[in-house]
Length: 344
Image (cartoon, rainbow, N blue to C red; front, top):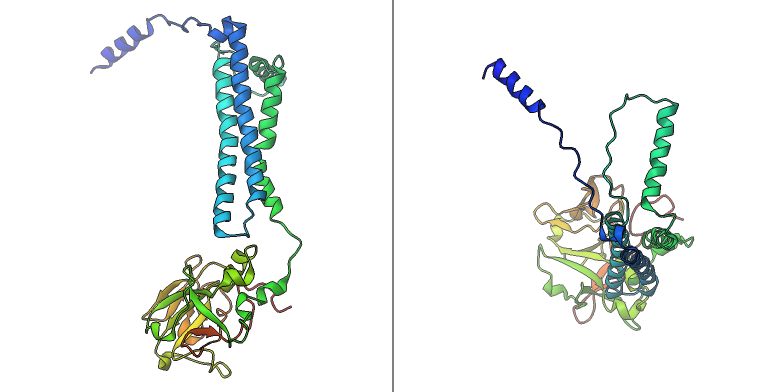
């Protein structure tokens, strides 16, 4: 196409008259004060739902504490999440309904002006903000003002309350040096090892070469009670494996910590406490999926790669008269991350 035709087309297009904005069509709430009042009450109701949902979320944090049981933890998280979600959803829906039904809908055109920052521009910006505030008509609707303020105040509470509530000055370092394995049943040589979550005791004969078991103390719930069950379980979780005893490196004093190639180590990574459970049978390596710390189980779970700076604590084990695996003592060192205070 020639330049002449392109110029002619642009000239023809510029010759059309600008149709301008469509005529403003007043809404029902603009014409009928009763309709406007109904819309206001609807917006207040949405903000009220937000307030109630936020309160329910905060209440769920206290009614369903995290340390009771796994079921309680799930219910508490559900209530907290639903309350938080509905709290912000109510604010969003209320703001949208307010804007569509009550705020000024007259379309306005502002001519382009030079882009410079001078006193007049700043004054215009302030005037625009004031005009926008006036368009919300919030000054004439104190009920809306109060409902919005209440929703905005209550909405962050489901986030803030758990954050503050979980902060505690009770930082007892010695708790990490004690686990549920220390408690032996009366008259028994040690507490039996059981599968997680079935709580079925494990016989040594059932642990074949190369097999892996995720282990907890037998009858842990009865031992520690409902309130501390999850906390004690988190500290006491163990990974049980079996390998050829000839492949194992055993330090002096640990000769009786394993049983015919069956060994048990804490599942809590010594880096930042992630669960270590990725076992490679051929290399006897155990990998933490969080930051790739790698432990050599054939060499007392010593670190061969990654940021962890100490081996996984080993649980001394043996068998009882019935052939079940038992823990003969607690861990000899604190489980979990390697914090500088752990030897206190």
